[in-house]
Amino acid sequence: MSHARQVFGGSTVAIALCCSEGRFFLRPGGRVNRLIRYLLARYAEEHGIRLHAFVFMGNHFHLILTDTRGLLPRFMGEFDSMLSRVLNRHWGRSGRLWESTPYRSWRLKSAEDLLQHLVYLAANPVAAWVVREPGDWPGVISLPSDVGTKRRVTPPAGGLFGRGHEGSALPAEASLEVHLPSYFEQEGLERYRRLFQRALDAYLEDLHLREGAYSGRDSAKRLDPFSAPKSAQGGPSFGLIPSLSNATKEDREDLTVWRHSVRAAFYRWQVDKTTRFPQGTWKVVKCYGARLVPG
Image (cartoon, rainbow, N blue to C red; front, side, top):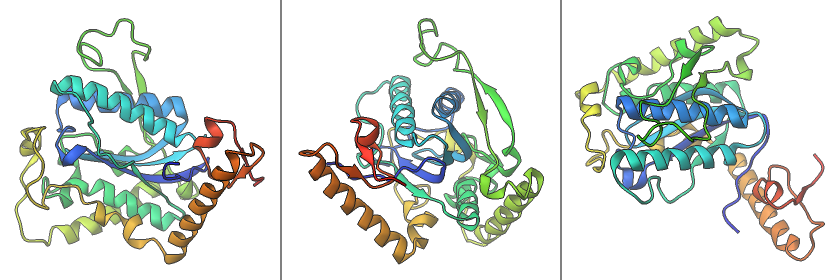
């Protein structure tokens, strides 16, 4: 069986996915930005995904979201698949758009962990030496001031595939909303925005102490979509994702034990369909009707 992924309805999760070979297929631009915003809003609405933060760099993207219905794999599958199709058409290419390994995901189990990820996402264009301030990034990004807002988004002129919108099963518009995370509901929207902004400003202050030059927003829009970074600057920095560097030994061990349990249950289930799977098992339950151990 494939690598098991934990899915818990109501959990808040950080997501990261890179383009194939690190190429710049997400290069910022008017049509690309509209495609991303529309599809992100459309599939988030359909699958009960509450978006808290997002940034789409030239060759990778990050999301922070709450999976209210336990449908994260379905959301990611449909969003990634459709975005791949429309961007392949946009760039006049075919084949795999995303890296071969599955998207990275990590449950955020505390307000502190969530805030660290929020800051990391918002500062991504600065950490990549492109722009000095996150708001200068010409691509799709959410900032502290965007939390609690909702905007109407529509496909670009000519529809998703550049040949008109007629006959499409997708609606003509969607609402892209950035939600207040449940961890901070008691703080209230305005206090949360200030907390997020202060933490971001502190992190940016440290980044600005580095020696080096920013390439600028125009350089991001001029990237060759078929090229890849020639150095660490401007490339995806998955090794710095807080969840990967700060996960406790217990968290890693718990995940390993859980995956072994799922695999063992799967082998038993192949001969005994009454076998129950550990809580958090997704595909074999949603797609094949297997049952979970009572929670």
